[in-house]
Image 1 (spheres, rainbow over the protein chains, first blue to last red):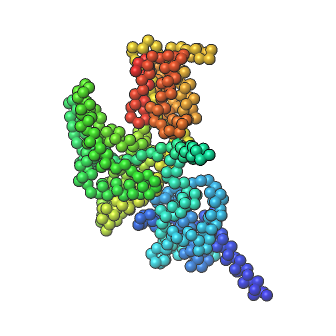
Image 2: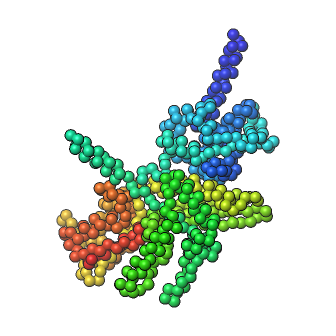
Image 3: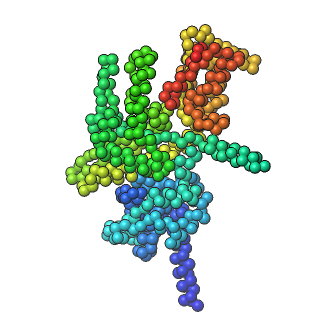
Length: 160
Length: 320
């Protein structure tokens, strides 16, 4: 019974950690623009916080998409966020919950670059957590089209 | 019954099509600075004064990268619902119109055409927004980099509405077309974000234009002449100002110059379309003012409207 309880607590904690990460309002990440890549893509280095290294890779992908959608990235081709409507995270909560869930649609627009290799300088220990810098590429053009189709991002020719 | 349904459907379709504002037309030009740096200019003599104008035709013909960059921007803008009017096509149209234009000139005073090629092109293309494109390459050690410059100008007011010129990524291996392509891709989203802000402002506050009111010498009245409006004596200038206040979006305009002979209204925000839903320009906006001033109690013998470019109209009182 004791073992079962411990297992349950561990499962609940890991689920809540993924949930917290997929919350659009979670901004616990750092994104650095690297360069404009191929047609409609941008390369970023995302510093994600995690307990296990492999989780950092998943968080980095999610964080890169969230940064483009909600924050904008200084110095990049996406200085302004795609979603400019105030309170959009709450207004479209159901959409984003589904979009950023584990294995969600956001994965269609982001990929780990550089074969997932991490430079030694980009692997840090912060308190009890790991901070890892992962290079990811985001297909911003396709991501925008998806959000436009969902009615979350206004088309440039909307109203004309 | 069938007829009623058809009429209803037609009205609905009309409402949908009129309810939308006219999509602005965008046209791209190499900037004057780029033409100057790359030697694509024509010098002509206008009654003793040297006039230097960009040579767009030769630039397009001889500079392969220019055509490639324009095509790239055109493709990206078309993806966002705004295909550009091409400079090449407009140049051809201007050439076609040239013969007619010359014939017209000889019929009147015989004086030379004062319009520059830029004016002719914007007139032919009827572009609402002009994109001015340029770039410069810099070399630092083994690395080359391209700094692209793209600026959108409101053709109505000449005001800059969006611009981007970030420093390009240095590269030792990439060739010029690749670097230019990357430079375009790196600016286009930020550029479009600024265009979006301009469109949002357009929908919220209307299009910005300039209206100038003046009088013919032959007319014995002036802008200080008083008229009785609803039992109150008012000068014509105040009456025109009231009209502007009522007919501009949110009453937004600025009277920058007012004398007995002329008035200048700047930053006049006009609606994108009139009461019947048709897209309007500055001259269309002034037509109701023309009718108003020609009617009682003013009965001004004639009010002439002169279109000056896309965003400026002169209202001249006293004759037609």
